[in-house]
Structures are given as structure tokens and as C-alpha cells.
Length: 510
Image (cartoon, rainbow, N blue to C red; front, side, top):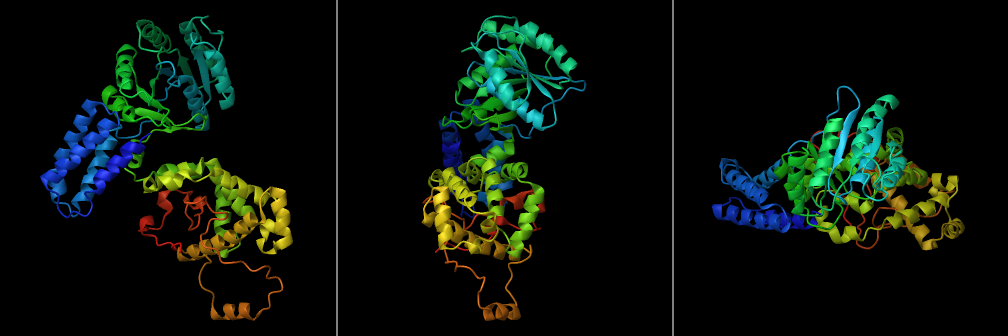
């Protein structure tokens, strides 16, 4: 959604790099280009004016004129002002002192309230809560059934005493749900209310009546990020008619301009709590203004990437893999486990897109095919446990058998095995450089001993293959080896002091 805006802002700020001193004309020109970029992204005009005013005031002050690198300082200012527009600090849900906590969802029809209710319930369940969904949308056909299905998929209880389809009193259902939650020991109640195609008096009256009946701790306005400027008008209407405590953005995976996300926080004065970026229940997360601003400016989102890695990687297995990596004992079985964990994190293109500078490789990222990893898994699963543990024993006849069993060609099997040896060698060298054990050069005695032995159990010779990732990416995906994401498990604080990943010199592909 933010691709176009990100490209424009990155291009504008790129022009400042390399300038030792910035004149007022440079700042005015940059501000004008940023204004155009924001307006093209459908950001509300009052928001654009406020943003440009703040940037120009700070850029023309001593903050930039006395800086050693003025261009970098301007980029820092733009980033900070973007964070401010998006809400500044991350805000969490306010939980009631005396359960249950009541969360009311409000918004127009089609904004994704019902699906979002399931996503929010599943997220709360992972946080250790016992949420209950409440079907108060008794107008839209099959809305109650949809909520029940979503609740079943999320593994949470759905309170739906009325069949819906125009039958039942939503205010009475909402009131009864709080009593039911106390009886069944649910500490969070999520009330899914009815929407309309547009803001009308009946919609506001019903939403206000439900609010008065349950006195929600959070009233979240669910807004479709694809509807543009109308999101601002609708948000103002709900703020005045119902009263909001927060905003949830849905459909951030769309290709529409993302101005609504940058406008709604400034207009309503209420923070954005969550963002939904897909159809699956897992496509949902807390909204972090600083991380979103960083992604818009093409600086990546390493913190979110690390958090996703922490969720899917088993800490104990990751430590075992790290130990094997340092000693060069990493097997195809270990590689298969790592690959499955990466796949659970989501599409590979999305993960790579969180890396800094990924915006400059959009064409290559678009060619990354997740099915390639599935083929690699099929090949490894076609091997015996002994072959996975000791890939050196995979000779020509074994490769033919594996190829037939996994539905690929012998060449595919060769590529996987050969690239695995190359990647393992490269990872072992990197582990030695960072003090993880192994990887260092052998002593003269060790080299002599290896050289003097005739290779009885040496196995087939491993051809030298350029690149590093076993199986490789599709054309344009790039080689160079895939780092072990499990090493990110502890967060950024676990990196060695003074270590700067951007200055890491990796082997170049010839």
C-alpha cells in the first residue's frame, strides 16, 4: 500500500545525500516534493500542511545548520515527524481492573469488522486471555454465522443467542453478553456491531445504544485503509456520534494509496492500535508508528522481523543448530527444520521486504517463489534419515532414487546437495569470524593429517558452486547464502557491542 509513497520519499531524500551544506532553496525544494508525494498518496490536506510546516521549521533551524551531516539530519527530521503523524508511541489495549474487559468494534459495512474480531480474539488468546466474541450484527445476512465460523477458526467462544438476518435486539444481546462472560469466566468481550454502507442516523443510534448498554473499555473504529479520504469523514462521524478510543486499520495489503492511515490518527486524535494486512487470522499485529515510518522511508523493519522469528523458532533447537553450525555438523535434517520455521513466518518476499534497502530490489523480490522452498522440502523428505544426517553418502544412484521419489530432476537434487555443502562451509566461516566456534583455519598438523589420508569414507566430490542458498532462488532472487534466522532469537540487544550489520562484508557473487 505504501510502495508509491515510499518510492517518492526515498527518491526525494536521496537527492540530499552528498551535500555538505543545505541552502534554504534546497530545503524548500525538498519540502515541495514531499508535499506532492503526500498529496498523491491521498493524505488529507490539513495533515500535509501540518507535516510540511514542522519539517521546514526544524530543517531551517540550528538542528540542521550545525549538523555534521545536514542531509542525514533532514532525513531524521522527516522520520520523526512521520512517526508523530502516525501516533508517536505504540499504545496497548486498556484492560479493565475488574474483568471482563469490553471491546466494541464500530465501522462501516465491508470494513472487515467480523474478520477483525476473530483476529483480535486469536491475538488476545496468545497473550494469555480468554476472549469471547459477541454477535451484535443482526442486520447483515449471515453475519452471525460468519462470526461463529471465524470464532471456531480462532479457537474462541462465540455468544450468539439470536439468529440474526433481521431478527433479534442487538442491544439486549450486548447486555446479556457481559453477564455470560462473567458466568463462563471470559476476561475479554469483543462486540461485533452492525455497519452500514454509509453513515446514517439509525447506525449511530444503534451503536450509541450498545455503547450505553455495555460501557466498553475500548471503542475501536475499524477503517478500511483502501477507501482514501472518505475514511477521514467517517472517522469524524463515529468520533462525534459514538466516541472512539482507538483505530484499527484493515486491508493494508491492498494496492490503494495509503493516505487514510496517515490521516485518520491526526484527524480523530485517537491512536492506531492494530493493523491487519491479509485474509488469514495470523495477518494481524500491534501498530508501531516508528516501525511503519521506517518502512515507508525504506529503512526496513528489523524489529518486526525479529519478533516473528522469535515466535516460530524453537529456542532450544536454534541453539543446537548454532552449535552444529560452528562445528560444521549442520545436517539436511537441521536445514529442513530451519526452512519449515522460515515458512511459518509468512511469504519469503514479505520477510525480505522488511530488510533495510529492500525497496530497491522490488523486481527481484517479486520473483521470489515460495514454491521453490516447497520443492526443496520435498527433496529432503525423499532422503533416508542417514542421508539427511550425512549428505556425503548421497552418490549417483541415491540421487536418482531421491529425484524419482520427490518428483524432481536429478539436476535439482544435485543443486540442493552441492549448494548445501557450499552454504555450510560459508556459514562455518562466518561463525568463526564472530566467535561462535569452528570456521577458523585449521592448524598445519590438522591440514597435513587430512591431506595424508586416502579418502575411504570421503564420499563423492562436492563441486564448487557459486552462491550459497541450497536450491537457489528463482532468477533474480540473488545468491550469497541464506543467514540462519534463528540467530536473531534474542533481539537486537544480543548483538556484539559496536556491531553494525550494514558494514558487514560478505563474499561477492562472481
